[in-house]
Length: 131
Ligand SMILES: [Zn+2]
Ligand SMILES: [Zn+2]
Image (cartoon, rainbow, N blue to C red; front, side, top):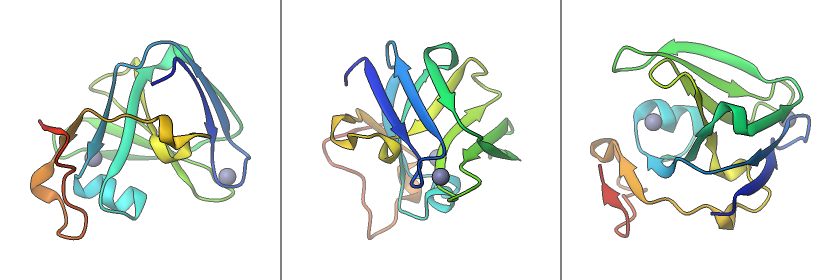
């Protein structure tokens, strides 16, 4: 994936610019990601919080993950687009939803997690490693 990436929500009120090295990129099939995205999985990449500049107002929904960590989901309060996620497990990292990229074709996931929750209509990409 390129080391400069830009993206934003559906209405454009929230924009981001990332410059740096992506820690990893993956598909998550957990139920939380399914609900958050309204789809079969979240396609996301993980970056250092310091490497991303976010413009606009992001609202957060706080919850506790199945593994017991405090988790925040960030979305645009104007259009409701889910955009990012943070976890107390990795406080210096932020997970960005890949479909928010201006050019989502640059997203290259390398593994899939929570495959046991994959829906029959959205199976795990066979090209990906299973975590
Ligand atoms: Zn928006
Ligand atoms: Zn998930």
